[in-house]
Image 1 (tube, one colour):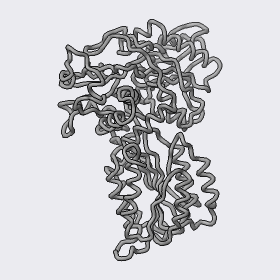
Image 2 (image 1 turned 45 degrees about the vertical axis):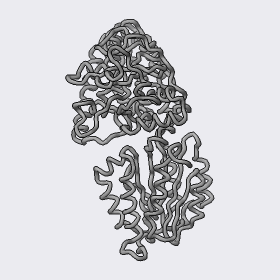
Image 3 (image 1 turned 90 degrees about the vertical axis):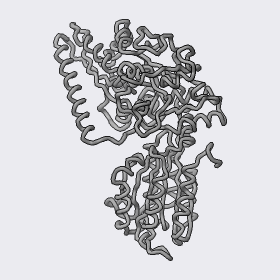
Image 4 (image 1 turned 180 degrees about the vertical axis):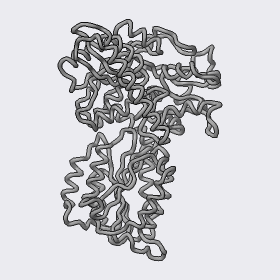
Length: 552
C-alpha cells in the first residue's frame, strides 16, 4: 500500500480533486493501453491477458509486460497492466460478476484473505510472491538518537514493547493496512499476550488513524497543530521513498526482533481465467520471477521474494536478508483484529431508527416529541464516538420505499465525515418525517442482513434498533420467522450483535430482548420517554466499552 496511494477504507475526499485525479489516472491507463497495443503489433497471437497490480509494483510489472508484447511469433501474447488500489480491487471482486482481470497482484496476502472473507469465495487465499518489502518501524532522528543510533541499532521492543520508553507511536487501521497488521503481530510477540499486550495496544491506539499517509504528515515540522509522532509502522519501500524525497526529516528504519510478515505481492491467476489466457498468465509469472525483472524490482526499491536486497537504495536501512514469514491464517488474523477492535473501540454501527407515528407523541413534562428527544440524544452520542467509527442510519415505519418499511438516510461512513458534512442536518430533519406504523421485524432483518454482508474485521460490528413501540406490520414476517432467520445469519466467527433501545410505555420489552438475544446482543428499555438520554447512554456504554477494556 504505497505512500502515494490511497489506503484503507473509503475516506473523505475533496470531490473536485478526486474527480481530477480519476480523470488523470484514466488518461494514464489509456495511454499505457495504447502504447502496449502499438508495441504488440508484431505479435501474431490474439491472446491477451489483463493484470491488475498494486500501485507500487505496477510500474515494474508494466515494463515487463511491454517486453513480452514486443516479441514476435505464434507463442507471443499481450499483457495489459492496470495500476489499482488493492482495497478497490478486493471490493470489486466481491461485488462484480464477470468483469474481473485475469491476474491480480495486491501488496499483501492479507488482501486475498480479505476478498475471500468478504464473499469472493473463489479467490485463492495464497499466491506466488514476485517481490517483497519488509515492515519496519519508522523512527525520527530524535527518537533513534534516544535509542543510541547510529552506534546502536534501534529495536522495536524499546519503542512499543511492554518496557518501552515514552514515545508517541502511530498506527493505521490494521484491517486495511498490511504494515499495521504486521505491527500487531510484532506487538503480540513482544508482549506475550495478557495485560502487557492490552497495554501495548492501548498505547499505539491513542494515535490510530484510518490512512497511513497521515503518519508522514505528522513528522516534526509537518504536523502543524497536531502532536508530532516519534515512530510508526510502515514498509521499507515507503520509508526509502520518503527518504529519497525528504528535504528536512529523514527516517531511520527499525526491524522487528521477531520475524513478521512482509508485504509479499502475491501473483494469483483468477478462477475465470482459462485456456490460452491461463497459459499466458503462468508464462508471465515465470518472466516476473526471472533474474532480469528481479533486478528491475531491486532498482525500484523492492527485495526478492526471499527477502534479499539486491540493491541498497538510500541510507539508514539494513541490507541484510529479512526472513520471509507467512501471514497467519484467516482465523488468526480475524482474532487479532477483533482484539484490536476491543481496545481501539472503533466500530461499524448500523442504526435503525423508528419514525412511526407514535414517535410524534410529546414527552410528558417537556415540550419535545419522542422523536425530537431521541434525535437530540443521538446527536450528542454521535460526538462521543471515535472519528474512525463508521455509522449508517436507516429509518423504518411502513411503506418508506415502495412496499419496504425502511429506507437509508445516511450511508455507512466515518463519524468524522458525518460531522463535517450534512449528517447532523439530515438527522435533525427526521423530526419532520414521522408517520405510519412500526415495521420492526422486516426492517430489523434487512438491516442485520446488510450488516452481515458488509461486516468489517477490526471493528465492533453492531446493529442498533431504536424504537418506541412493537411490531405493527401484519403484511411482514412474524417474530418466529425473524428469530429463525437471525439465528441462521449469525456467525460466531464474524460477531455482529443487535443492541435494542426501547422507549415509552408501548415498547414490548420481551420482544426487543428476544430479538437482541438471537444475535448475542442486549436490549435497554424504559417506559418513561423522558429518560431517553439515560437509556441511550446505557446502551452507548455497552458499545464504547468492550472487553478486555471493561468487564462483560
